[in-house]
Image 1 (spheres, rainbow, N blue to C red):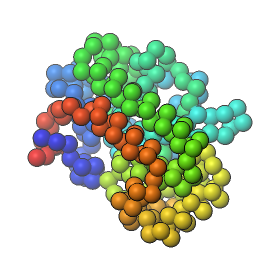
Image 2 (cartoon, one colour):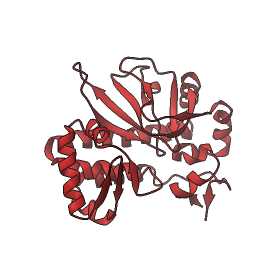
Image 3 (cartoon, rainbow, N blue to C red):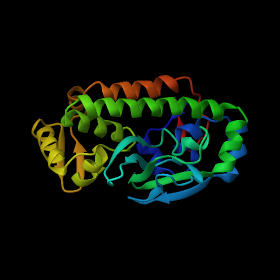
Image 4 (tube, helix red, strand yellow):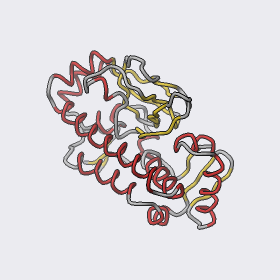
Length: 256
C-alpha cells in the first residue's frame, strides 16, 4: 500500500493521514495522539510564530504550505525552508528550546493538524517511532536550510526560482501556484524586478506560464533540467531518510 497522490488526497475529507509523518505512525502510536490533534485552517499570510515568541503548538500541514523565514533587524527577510504535507512546523519544541529566531508564515492557504506542545514533547520523549520520524525529518529540514543558503550564495536568481518552484510544486496537487511576484520575491529575499526578469526568461523558454497572481509550470522536466543541483539534493535527502517508512493502512487515504 502507498499514500495517495496529493491531488487525490485533497479531494477526500480532511484526515491526519494527509500528512506523511502522521500517516507513517502505526495505529498503536497514532491512537495516543489522535484525540489531541486539532484541524485548523491556515489562511494565506497567517503567522504561526514570530521571532523570539514561545511556540504553543506543533503543526502538521496537510494542504497548506508554511514558509520559515529569518527576519533581519531592518525587517528584511528571506525564506530558509518550506514545510508542507511532508513535515512539521515547530521542531524547536523537541530540539531543546521553545523559541526560535525565525518566523513561520503561511505561504499557501490550506489546513493543518496542530498538537499542543506539551503533548508533542511527551510523545517525542516516549521514544517510539514518532521520535525517530521527527528526528529524520529534522535532518531533512536542516539539509533544505543548508542547501538554500548555498544556493542563494552561488547560483543565479533564475536557478533559485527554479528550485523554489519545484519544491513548492512537490507539496501541491497541481502544476499551478497562486502566487504574486511580490510574494515570491519576499520568499527569495530579492527585489521584485529580479523575479520579473527571471520569470520572464523561464516563460520565454516555455517552462512556465505567468499571469498576475498565478504561475503554472508547463514543462516540469525542462524546469528540473534548468535548475541547479540544489533541488535534487533536498528532494533525494527527504526520500532517503523516509524511504523505509511504512504508511498506516487507512482506506480513506491509501490505495494500491
